[in-house]
Image (cartoon, rainbow, N blue to C red; front, top):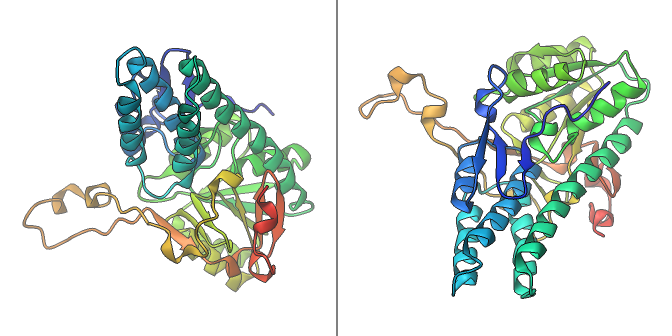
Length: 343
């Protein structure tokens, strides 16, 4: 089995090449960005998506801002203005703000060679994410020994991270150990990240995948075909409540009903230690036109659209949270929640 066949982000040393995931799987096209505002638009428009990848892209966006402005008189003001633009690109993925905080800290050190300092920081964020993915893959695969099948939601592979993947990283590692693992992917409406991205990415790795309609998940669980649902995360509160792609919460409820275990896989940069629980996680709502048929997307239409792109799964419905620092089983039952993962 090969891994990391495709990368969402490629740093060239001068520019950031971003794979336009809206065009996959039919077209593999990279857009090249040379400024922070372009990277912010790539994030906002979902050319790049997935919490870890969003954070990495934002870090490189800061590097591009420094490249553009560092010879000007008030370049710090210009760079920090660009950081604010990047921060406004998506509200839910905490990795975005985590990465920008790291870049701010480097800028505040006032290094003699500020461009080298921010570039090294962004590259380290990228490489650290790849390494964390591999560790999570192995930790998660340890929980899947001897099982029949798994289901995943949205896309959590190389396309959504610095490489290898979070939930898909676990699946990749498990398949490497157990060639008989059956993998099911939900289509993940309305952007079809499961149908367009996950199924394609796994096929590139030679991993057979069965695509199902989102509404078939309950019947799949009742059939006994799967033992685990494995998903990523965009923000995890300190008690283990988890925000992820819309539809994750309903899968967790269904899993509880059918005795299927539920695994969340994410780097510790996805944990928002400032939030006691998931009640205060900001949920992004995108334009109704992403959901509505064109005939209803008119000013006088009687049909409107509600398009939240994330929901929050309570920790009580989660069987395991897997990070690069280790695994917490049944986080709602742990006295300190997931605090042991904070290093």
